[in-house]
Length: 184
Image (cartoon, rainbow, N blue to C red):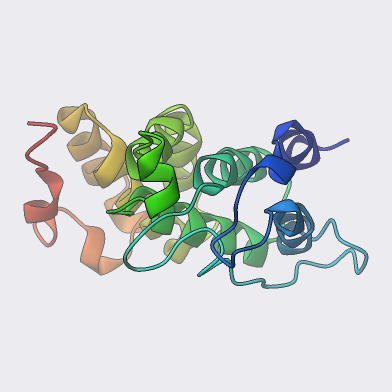
């Protein structure tokens, strides 16, 4: 069993309400297909928008999906799947709101997703430094700008990895995004 399969198996999908209004059980298969662990054994893009996240809110499965995305990044993935999981993780950590049902239970899903992403901080730093893909490095760096509380370390990695990052993420070009009022 791979890391992603193990993490998917740990999640209580049946007990979660998906953004589509159904139980979140189908997300397990969607995440496996995304990773290339589905029946086709090739990564296949699956949109989780309106199931896990939307531009306005995150839904109940979002923290579980954040954990699965981190497990996927620690696992062996095809480059396309790695990029899809990074994009998904970026949507989750950038979330701004919680669906009404979860909010009614006192959950702050965006904060929960960011908290889980912090647990994978070194996976994100490794992605920046890996030289696998400029796009993946840029996405990982952008995620770090949201979840990394050690701003000096983040600035230093930006300097060290400047040539590995997309131009828009290099020091001096996106520094105004480095400062979040709740991390200062």
